Image 1 (cartoon, helix red, strand yellow):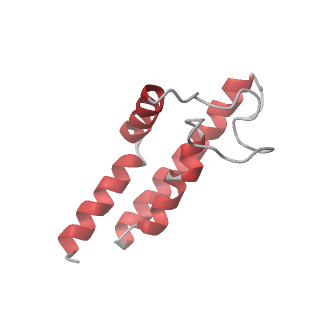
Image 2: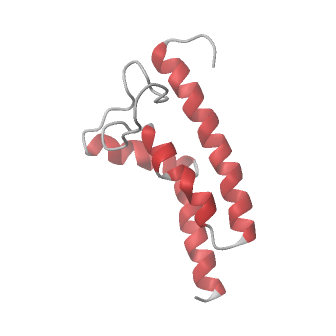
Image 3: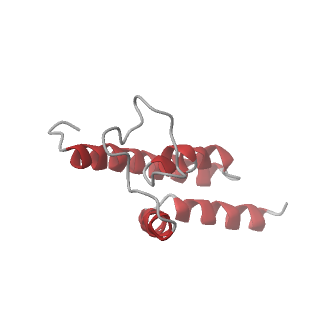
Length: 103
């Protein structure tokens, strides 16, 4: 595989880990009829993750695996940073979703 192909693949994966990718994830999940999150356990602390049913689960089921799949060192570093932001978002979303005051 050429360096150019590896860079393009990393760019595509970085897009999925960014804000636009997150918006696209929620849009597609909605179009597929998936709920935003489990009603009482959005972080799947006491249930199995199911991104076929809950949009928020997709962050852990699929997106969290992308950094290890990156083809370049720079891409991996950027992917880890973006994943960190997504995981913070996930936690804050869950707090809002359940009405929790602590996040």
